Image 1 (cartoon, rainbow, N blue to C red):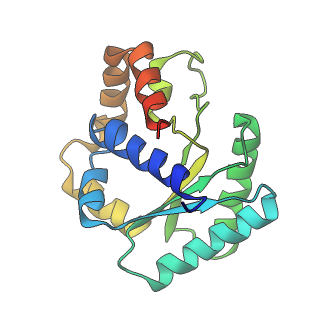
Image 2 (tube, rainbow, N blue to C red; image 1 turned 180 degrees about the vertical axis):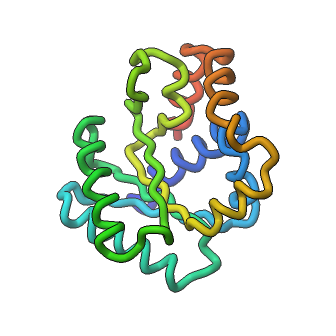
Image 3 (cartoon, rainbow, N blue to C red; image 1 turned 135 degrees about the horizontal axis):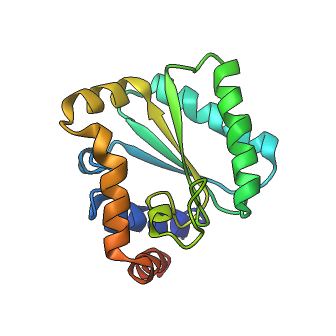
Length: 182
């Protein structure tokens, strides 16, 4: 078995059983069905290599229109949420410095994700909790197209908060833990 396989399998399970099954991202199902989501595992832990590989993923999207979006999974790096946020800030600056502002956007997911101002145990944090630290690299044109075709896009965040609070913390923990099982 490829050493990336367990990380990809867990991420695909999370995407299917949490994000798509509960419609947290109403745009994910279409891309999953089309097979246009790339899953890329970063095994390295040093920031420079992780940033370099993020730029390589941007270049891959530049050159391959068949890939709509990439989930860049950090298998061993950024276990601490604070370290992850520091990396994310650098990555966002690098995106701008490399001329990708307005072309790609980064969305963030982490096993310990929590929203500023939210309690650590608030179920709403599970909208951005994932099996591993990851960056979702999205095409801005795809976001614009999806937003313009979705009737109630501004209410997605509140709908997700309501949904996760209805599901409850125990259920969400169980769903995320189930993604990690072989």
